[in-house]
Length: 209
Image (cartoon, rainbow, N blue to C red; front, top):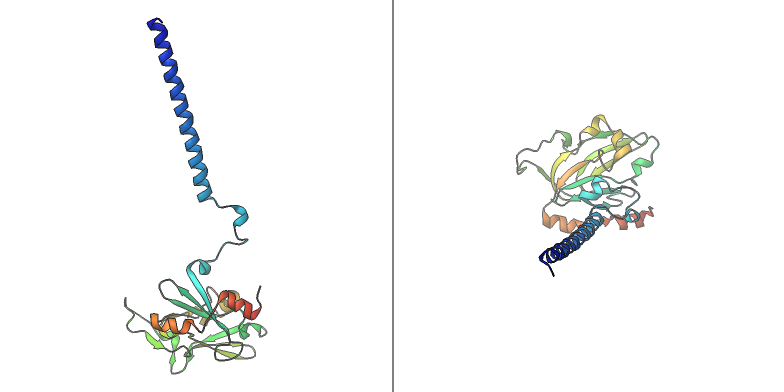
């Protein structure tokens, strides 16, 4: 075999090997791209009909049905950092009154809760309340209802927007219409948690869909 023919054969073999390697790299790249696509883009058939809300994403929902009085259903949304957001559950009696809630009064007990201002990184001046301590009174055209802490802890904030905008309770009690934010101690939370219902338990109790 002449040197020219041997050289051509060698180049042909090299080209064949390079093409084969190139094809393998393309197949590997396609496979990795498919894997990445499966990870980043979920199966549409497995997606929920509506995206989860911020509450569902960041909080665990608990409920205190008939708290202190029949029909006084309240929720407690607990964040991973321990903070608890307290408010009226959608099944609360106040929402069944004609016209819904028309006023919110934080002047209960011996002090006006809306006047409490907690400052400092450690919130040392926060007042500590029991689970049955009154937070405010919500009024309808026919009646009034006392809203309570539901959890023992430090009152960090009340939603004073409700004073001027009580309608937030009627439209979004589980979001902008929350009542207060409370920070319980870990031990106190463990005690009260046993008396609260999970979302599924509450739905079953109230026969909600």
